[in-house]
Image 1 (spheres, rainbow, N blue to C red):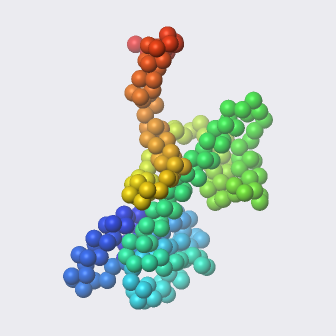
Image 2 (image 1 turned 30 degrees about the vertical axis):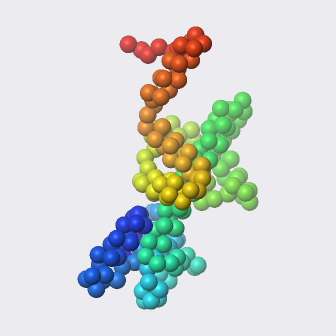
Image 3 (image 1 turned 135 degrees about the horizontal axis):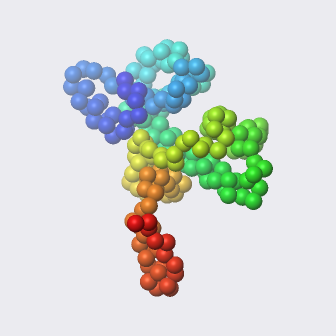
Length: 212
């Protein structure tokens, strides 16, 4: 069983390779991060149904109540986990944009972001575990001054966007959140220089000069 964040097409290939050796293969998309040890592992399973039944006692031990699901044949578990992570990217981006707007508001000096995050988790429609984690982050560093806005990606968001293209599905929020992560690693992009240069050329708009 592959319980990592693997690409579902790799699962399909591996099953074929291992079948010739008489080895049964299953994929398990697992969510919960470092908290899984405390609260259980949310698990998305792909493979043959008899194999799932064979390992189900293990899943009952590791997962919380109603915290595991047989999703279908090999690859299905990691496919569901891939989409899960794409949704996670978009949710994180939405929270980031919302709090950035709060930070830029005329009421910014009055805001305590830990308190706002806590408030929104008290029955509001945007409550979530991610928001609980954000509350914890604001508790440690109220303005996140100790954190650089540089965001890596571990691959699942890219796979989600690739799959959306193959399936002709518009995942605009997920794609935007992935591209924003790319931008976070490029503080002075060449494309923005081109935009500034063009505005100067066609309209004589001011250009901010780089420091020599």
